[in-house]
Every structure is written in C-alpha cells, then in structure tokens.
Image (tube, rainbow, N blue to C red; front, top):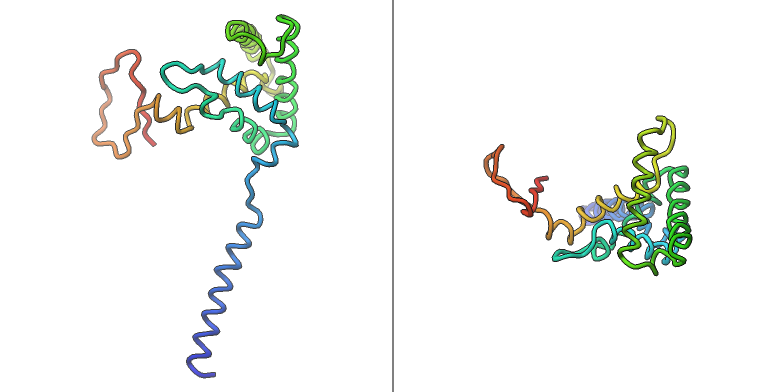
Length: 190
C-alpha cells in the first residue's frame, strides 16, 4: 500500500465514522410536534392556547397565545409526562369544555373573556382545595398542570422573555439589593 492509498483509506474510514455517527444520532431524533396529534388535535391545541391566553392575557406585552403556548403544552405533555398524567390532563381539557357548556351553553373558545376568567377562577379554587387534601400518590390536578406549563411555556419563549424579563447576558458584580419599582421587569440570569 502506498502513501496515497493509505491516506485515501484513512479519509474514507474517518468520513464514514463521522457520517455514520451523524446518521446514527439523527436516526433516533425527531421532532415530536408532528406526533402530538396522537394525543392532541389542532382544536385541542387551540383550546390550550385560549386557556393559556386567559391565564396570561395580552396587554401591552404579548400574551400566552402569541408565544404559541398551546403547542408547547402539547409537546411537553406528550414527551415529558407519564401516561397517567397525560390521561388526567386530557380528561381535564375535556372537563373545561364541558363546564363551559354547562355554565354558559357554549364551548370554552366561544365564551367571552369574562366568562372564561370566571370559569378558570372557579376551577383554580377547586384545584387549590384538591392539592391541599391530596395524598402523595394522588395525581396532580389537571388545572395545576395547565397553569405550570403555561407559565413555563410563556416565560421560556422569546415573546415572554424579551417583553417581561430583564436579561443580563454577562452580569457584572453581584448586587443583593437593587431598586425595584412595581411594574419593572424582573431579572433573568442564567
């Protein structure tokens, strides 16, 4: 084997390992956004967007719907929650629509913002009572999951982070006491 053949063989082997490893790594990696349809339909995602928008409404800053929180919640429930918690969440989503129909003779999406707020405040009070009385092995209340995921999805989104948090990429010295006026964005340091 001459030098040229040796270099060619080594290059082939190295190229194969690099390309092979990339193919191996990427073969198991797929976005689950397409896969959420086996748990959630587009109408479910729209409903989650409206629930999230009721929790964090649009004001002079973007709301939860602008941050596409419904799609975020669908991915998180699908990828990160146990089948039992998924079932609790999906049943809770249906229950919110049923409660809206019972109280207002409309689906949650068709209700006015005031009616939505009234309904979610009632469910939130029910959730707090449930959480206080639940045993350790009992599942969380579905509305607690919705609120937590709404906050997580919103404040980790570009819209929520840029408009509601003050981000200092490279913080200087540590100041334990900084002046804060009501309405100022809070600081987010990684």
